[in-house]
Image (cartoon, rainbow over all chains, first blue to last red; front, side):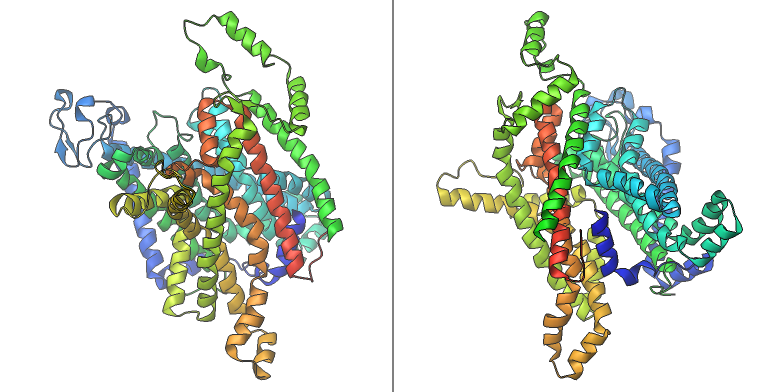
Length: 315
Length: 319
């Protein structure tokens, strides 16, 4: 598989060295000032993040997830018919168990965002570390690491993640994050290694090596800053991708445990044809929220990507 | 060429063995066994133990693995406890559906991706190009299951143009009715898959064509009087399509794996849905073979991509 990569590199060789110049904060500001849509996405993204986290603080998860069968499938804006919840109005209606869809939506979004973030951070740290080490040491180390990565890449990852999810005893949020991270770091490592290889061959790195700079310093202070813009871009794009994967797995029923609300499990209520056709308020808001979030984060990522590459800059 | 293929095929064998051992170990750790579902007060636990013993479920792991490999080499991949028939039959029943879905999806992916990529590369910065870029961005970002659900909701439920569930109508009896019904059930899921699958095709074609426009060989062709349309069809497209051609193997594999979401949402009874059903019923002999099959398909896809790249681009030597 390395052979294939090399082949790709030969074909796309003028692409590899394109995105290296350092990225100052000014470049990003200019890029967003030029691209109004990116600015709008950024504002919308931040607005959603703030709303979700602040409102989730005000909500009591136990109250939101309390089952009240009197209130099953109430349409939006209706009042509770359960004497226990007297006087509560359901902004977005209720689901089959009479839970407030608005509350589930907010808490689910918070969970999905937090998990997406956690997986992104873990996989990025692992990926950057392993990718840079492989590129720095090259030769045998690089070969061994790449063989392992190639092997994990050909595994049917989605299936194996699902198997692990059903297999782990006392499965919880932490286990889910670790399982996802265990398979997703490889793509990152491969990407970072590819870019770090070009940096590692530059003269100033060789000069540093000759001068006897410790390896750790070369990696942290010389190689890392040179690919930092790529790491940031990668973080954003992966964040969006991981949110998509988490909600997807929760949708299939192999994501978050059933008692933890997630955007994906809200959407999965639509697998019931009656809910899909006639009770859109249960699953549509969650689907739209996922769409908006993923599109915004990706668009911001694209703007950062352009800012990182002087050839593509608009501003 | 043949030597390379042979060598690569040989290299696949250890990979397949490692993969199968890995999955075999994982399968062993799966909670419960096929008889867990039969536990009820009327069944004597001793009877269950006897059944476990009879099916060899109590043997040590290496013994079970070697027995499995021995049987597999003779074409016996074990029995599904849920469907009460051999795993080969269970998967064989679903294979056709998934292959049909993947084939139609692949054809549609290229039918959408190639023209859009070529047009947006040729007329870059036009309104068409800008729309294609937006489409490409959206299809990259949107999670499969959200789009698939919205498609079912809009086209299957509200407009009623396509069936929203299943792979064939029960009322279809004659050959032609059955074929038509199958096709009709395929349309919506394959369009959904295709719409999302065009990302890399459009991306590569567009950038390659834009780069090729200013390259020397195009200038040469133009200055010796080759008409512009011919330059595009004969010269630029041939060069720009190299990465697309080599991506073909990956595309097929991606389609097969992506079918898990699509098949689940459209209740399309293919291998992806079979996998999820088997996970839920702990039918691990089926799970095991399915994962192995997808793993092998992944290997073949990579090999196929390398071979295509080698065939279309004589500059590249892969050994």
